[in-house]
Length: 146
Image 1 (tube, rainbow, N blue to C red):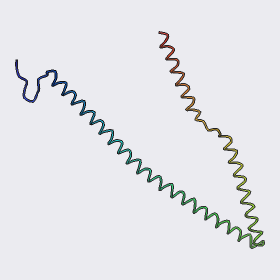
Image 2: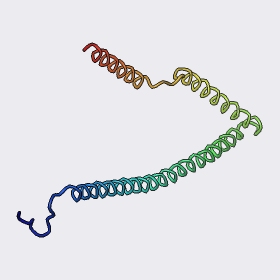
Image 3: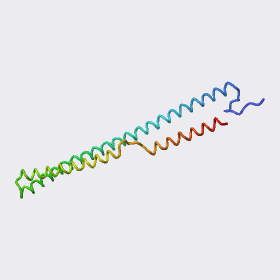
Image 4: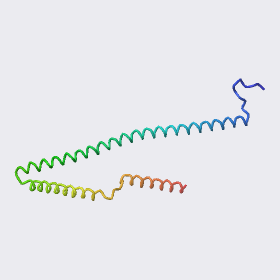
């Protein structure tokens, strides 16, 4: 019998099994490390995106607050303009009545829209799931018919 070249082992049973087992173990370790690294990368990306989204939402909230103060200043200016023609208390009362009327109108329109959309159901998803279930049922029937 000839000897294998240097660096190549002879293919006998137990050594080959140990080598295959070692290769499987190494592949398992590498896959595990790869998955962990990918999850760590995803976590880091999501954390960065979450911080950015949170600060953006805070800025939008701050803008809403500033807009509220600006609206208050405009209402005060309107009262002062009307106070040039009417007593100040009447001017304030007229502005308040107009604001409440607008608020009531917005509430009615909003209520109507909410009633039209309730209850919320994902219609296309429900249709798709029903179609998938029917396909599975038909495939099962065909499988039994064989």
